Image (cartoon, rainbow, N blue to C red):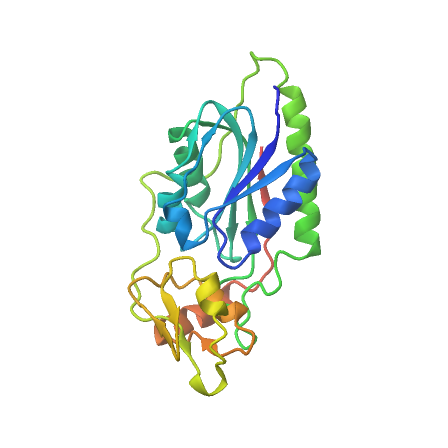
Length: 266
């Protein structure tokens, strides 16, 4: 198997998926490494060239056991020609359920050949200092495992040096897929008294739901509840106090605080 370069293709509103993929790339050790972020709103219209003999690591967060719909739509702009791919999902310490299988099937539909896959843990989007859910993850132990996984991928590439080499890979999940994240009305809001209208929230919003002029306005119909604006606000002026999300966060904190570890396939 000849690999000319390494590409990291991801949807990562809060940066946890990107961080995991960067650690995997470190372990793979192929240069150059190109980032293909599908996170910002302009990614919906981004021109994506055809993939051929690169190795592509594709990553996305898990929302209620599924891939985010917006990520799926953006990934569908990819076109590959038997391009080897490594698949990664990042979940908030509860479960990834059908998300990895969904990414597996999607990648094959787009022309990729998956050779390895993994599910890592990242701090949950709904996590707060008062109601922590996998806080600080991926941590050093997670990233060390990601580097080790990348080294495993490197060896797998070497084993696939022959054009006739097969790529047996199975990942967990069920089809038809479970229902994804339910529609929840509302969005994060701004505490006007401490907001400086710096625009950070608008810059990190993956769907362009936030506009900043003299005040911050959020379109609840575009908000995907990723909480990137909450986590990145430099003055902590953005908060997600939607009662439904608060209830979910408390439930996750009470029932899924025990540390889970990454799962690697094969």
